[in-house]
Every structure is written in structure tokens, then in C-alpha cells.
Image 1 (cartoon, rainbow, N blue to C red):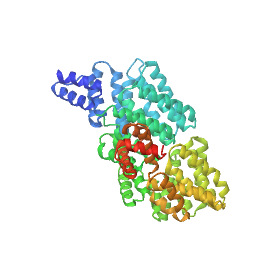
Image 2: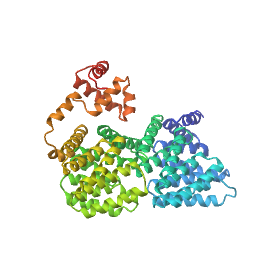
Image 3: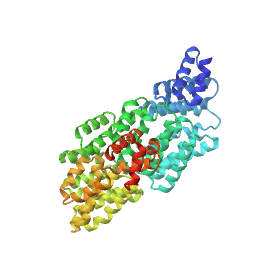
Image 4: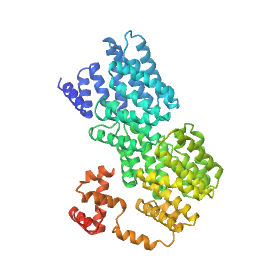
Length: 549
């Protein structure tokens, strides 16, 4: 059966579309065996064909039971339940988990499937924030998996242990497990489906706990994995969204917009991609908001909401910029009231404090800061420390305690700069400038405000630029001199030029700066125009001659 043999070969090579088409053709010629139905199901999953994935697993179950391989039938039933659970169809998912358990109850011998059926339990425990129980359940599952040498379950369970440890504030232990899990995932030790689940799961909980360095490393690894499987669809949408979020943080807003649009437009098949679509529109809304294109932001937030992604706190912050303070206050108070888990509240508390300060409600702003500080003490990480320090400094400044604000604001700016987050650092510098001015240190105030304004100009953050304009006086000469020294090149263009002068290709520049090759090409075109050269060699020579390296 040529179609069958060719389909198996394509499956082994990870050519998912070819494998799905050939195995489907073979199935039409003669009903596939349980082994081949499982291959067809996995290929369907990787292509985002969730219904075909479930249908193939359903067909495999009777054959496996008839052959006396009930544990494998249980495994198929488990993965069906898992699929429905992540589609949001919890009742059907629970039904399949119950069927799997009933089938397993009839099996006399011990088997690894007892560990797999602990997964629904730990998912429920983690979702409600019961990290102690989640840790215990995943630890028990890992021990079962180790006994049977099942690498997929071992690392699914250890990954969840890492998540629980972060939730319990045992950050170092959790991150050690995260680092070890990355080695297993990137070394090809796991099946394709579980590899994708581990990547997406780990990025999600590292994001939720503000471990941005680990998010960046995992997104890089996920990108490489996706690039190695060009036919895969299932995880590509989330990969692009995660890349867009990193680009947004690092100030490459144009690339962030491009990646978010690609995610929303090109990857709509599969549960994970549908979840990613809402995030993709939210990222687009954030870029438009920060640039001051409020009409485009409004539409993007609407699209995010339609796809189940709460468009907050971005929408409330936009209302504040639009001078609609009542709407901003109402929205952010509603969001805070709805969120009960500490880390979910931490995600919106900085916006809550900012809006309350703007509305003149210092008591609520102070309460928001105190809650965020309590979370920071329990969940120790540098990003949360920067967020809290900025909020603490802002509240102190509003209270008329400029001197107290300085230390916190300086620490926040230092962390954001170290993390490569120019916009966040610039926002803190504005507060620093205001604090220095309140203490009559006008020279330092101007330096901080000028630096912030330069960053806002480079990023295209027009609302922030306009909001601080009245704070800066007598800076024209200094700014012009700074612009002359860089020959009109932005900070990002200087970074690209230095990489080019170092002999790096566009692809290498994109990797080093974590931007797309398309963005590199656009920067190079701008550079060539500004310094009046036509070739890479001439641009490198210009950089050497004018001391730009």
C-alpha cells in the first residue's frame, strides 16, 4: 500500500500535511490500524485539525480494546478529553476523562496511564490557585512516569511542578525546573504534541509570574522549533504572539505589530491558535494605543474582546489618555473586582494605581500600591520589583514626598533598562524628572526628561511625548546637538548599523536584536537614506569614520 508506507514515512519526518493527506488516502483504500489511526490523529493535531484529531482517536479506541490493549485505549480517551477541555467544552472533556477512568478501573496490571489521569486533577488545582495540591498531584504523576520511563508524562508533570513552585513563591526551585525542562524540550526528547504543549504552557506561566528573561529564552526556543517544522500550524499562532509581546517590550513596535497581524490573519485553525488570536489583537491594540492611534486601538481591542480576550488594562489606559477619566476609573475598578488570584491582580494593579492617581483618588492609589507590594514580597522577581518600585515612587510623588520617591524610581528605571524595556524605563524617567524638579534640582530634571522624550520620539509614543512636553524648557540646543552626533539615526538604527559594521547578515542582526528580517531591511533602508550611502560596505565605512561604533 504505497500511500500507507509513504504516509508513515512522512509522519516520521514530521511532514505533517503530507502525512495527513497520505494516511487519509490510505484510510479510504482500507481502514487503518489503531497504530496508523494514532499517527493520523497526531498529524491532524499538528495541522490544527482538532475535529479530525478527535475522530481518529475515537476510531482507534475500539480496535485497541478488541486487541486487549486497554491502557492505550485509555490514553486515547485521555487525549480526547484533553482536547475538549482546552476547547472550553468542559462537560465533554470531563465525560471522556470519566470514560478513561472507568476503562482503567478494569485493568488489573499497573500502567503509566494512572499518571496521565492525574493531569485533569492538577489542571483544576492550578486553575483555582491551589498550588500546594497541584504540586503534590504532579509530583505523584512524575513518580509514576519515571517508573515506566514515559518521558512525555515526566516532563509534563515536572513542568507543572515548576508552575506550582512559582505560585508558592519558591522561585529559585521553580526556575531550576523550568531550565531543566527547556533542555528536554529543545533536545527532542518528547513527542511533537507534548513538546508544543510544554513550550506554550511554560511561556504562559512564566509570563504570568513576570519571569521575562525566561519568557524571552523560551520564546526563542519555540521559534526555532516552529521554524524546523514549516508545515505545523497548531503552535505557530501562539509563537508569533509571544514574539510580538517580546518585541513590544523591547520597543520594536513595528515588528510587534507585524507579528501580531500575521498570527491573527494566518493561523486560525486549532484551539491554541484561536486562543492566540485574541492575544494577537490585544497586542495590536497596545501598539496603536502607545502610538496614539486611538481609533485603530479601539478596533483592535474590540476584536480581542470578541475572541474572549479581556481588553484591559489597555482600554482603560487609553480612556485615560482620551481624558475620559470616569470611564477609565469604572473599567479598572470592575476588572480589579473580578480578579481574585494574586498574580492576575498584579497584572492590572499598576494601571489601577496610575488611573486612581490621575483621578485624584490617593487613598485608592495607596491601597493598590500596598496590595501590589504584598504580592511582590511573596512572589520575588525583578520585573515585579520594578513594577512595584515605580508605583511606590509615583504614590510618594503624589503625596509630596519627592525625596522618598527617588530611590524607588531609580531602581525601577535600572531594572527596566537591564531588561531592555525602553518604554517602561522612559515612563519612570518622567517621574524621576518630576521628583528632581520638586527638589529644585533643575539640571537633573532636564536630563531625565530629555532622555525620556528622546525615547518616546524614537518609539513613536506620541501621547507620552505630548503629555510631558510642557515639562521641558530650554532643551532645543541640547537635543539638536545629540541628534547631530548620531547623524539623525535612532537608537535602533544605530544598533543595526553597528551589527552591519561587525559583518553580520540581516538574519544574524534580526536574531541578535530579536526583530524580524523585514524590520532589519526597513531599518537599513532608512540608514542608507539618512547617511547618503548606497551599499552595506559604504555604511560600515561611514560608521567607522564617524565614530558610531
